[in-house]
Image 1 (cartoon, rainbow, N blue to C red):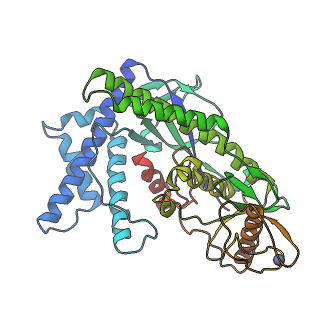
Image 2 (cartoon, rainbow, N blue to C red; image 1 turned 180 degrees about the horizontal axis):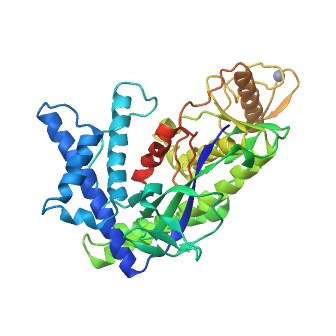
Image 3 (tube, rainbow, N blue to C red; image 1 turned 180 degrees about the vertical axis):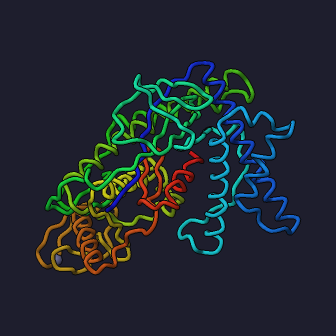
Length: 413
Ligand SMILES: [Zn+2]
């Protein structure tokens, strides 16, 4: 049976005492993480062998608590400290896997020290910590208290962990990881679809549907830009600047939230209506360095395709990325003839076979056909392993050893 893990985020509103307790827990988790990192770095510089996870835990948690310097570590939940160390261990493992080439994709940097000034602070509670959602809807966290939660939907089942996050706008979130079974999957449907991610439209589907990013998003982005300019004029270290920083962070968070909501609606509709979804494998990081950067990041395709990917896994649909080795735009989807290069402003073209093509719809049809062919050949460009964890929700294929790992990966939230 296929089992997936989903992440549910809710705003929490701790009172002053709870905020103080949270700040202390963020601090302790950071100290344990940094102590562990320092010990491993020192061992490496001294030419000693890599400190095992178990040894490190003894040194920076168990033994540290007994010292005068670190006695205060005993005042927060031990699980929070262990999970901070687990983050460090994962960061090291990812780094090693990247160095040795076991991990594909972007190079992973070695772990870095965490700072009080990091814009996101996070701590994680697992089942062992006995966190609990109370009947009154509050979230009980050990040594923190009962936090009010703004529930916007119900959790489909008990959460296996909860991460408490404080963002740059000084907002607090509870991010629950919930395991969902196959029985909650959608009934199968007939249609399959290819999606072309373009510059004139956010997305164009093989059935001819064109989706444009809503105007309100563009407006919010413009407002954000004005606030950022205002910020740059404020004197460093001044109170006005501090206020402006928070204002920018809030506006930024609002733009991100709005975009995420819109993308959630769109991706849910696509997954609900189609049995298989194929998208071109855009090298977004590569594109990001060109002058297209701004529009690419505004469009947020990476987060959108990630949503499609995990929702497909969640609801039992097929999702595949199609390698862009073939000229999806220039190939006639009727006869397969390849026409000469099309300038960006050419929106429609005619093939000698008599077919008239809308540039983007034709590309989407080709993507769909390539995806289906790949998939039938069992050479689908489906990424193996974990589905990357987006900020708001994440899913991983159930795998006992790696389940918490994926969550750990989000510690840099
Ligand atoms: Zn043709």
